[in-house]
Image 1 (spheres, rainbow, N blue to C red):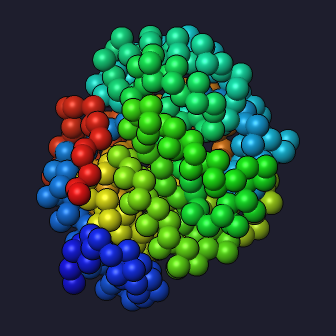
Image 2 (cartoon, helix red, strand yellow; image 1 turned 180 degrees about the vertical axis):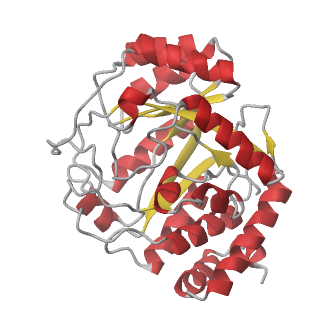
Length: 345
């Protein structure tokens, strides 16, 4: 099997046909072949280094009503928190002292942190020498511009599904067009752009998954995050079935074959469903690990889905375990910030 060459074909119809065939074939050997090929492409295109990016989940307030997310504004069972800006900055400084090269500041869509407050935090954290990724949802273009000018390097904004109908169903009050417009604005402002989608959403078909992958390629993402859907019991989708690990691993492998030079994480969602998820991710196309370094008193409260991994370990213990896994796999910790690579034309 040489799926890589087929999935790099400039003819979108050829690529779509191949994706539909692979996504519809549940034979275990198909998955193993894809994982093996994805790992080979990862080795050739981005090397054997693994980029470690520490996440600070600094607020679980959100103005959105996403029907799958435990942070949605209608969830009255969650205990809300906001980490003060000075504590966020200090946590980032501690991460830099540990050796991390990138910090990810992630929250719900929480406008409590104004344009100016976030810009000040970005400027302070940049003094550590770390790269900064922001993941704060849909904001005005003026906010994106101010944070880019303050020194933010990357922005992560998942589109979650490429199907407009499903998007509107799961995201009341907004649309896929708005999400894609934000991604375009981020690109125009010079951010390295990250996006991606969930695997196993109710109503998602193999054809929709193929379109999701095609959209990621069209966006020419520097970072691509794909992971299984995990229902939260306090949401309208709480009774639905979680996405499957084998399918998530297949989509991760296909993501590497479609975006050979993108940075792909072994996601927390995968680790939450599969104890060995990080290892499976790294051996099937991924080259990024994102340990959660949110202070422990807040970390368990950022419950976008239940039984989330990495909620009880200290930042240092998580970092140490991450280093050990990379070493066990014969890979190397990246000594650079892992800025986006030029896509293959």
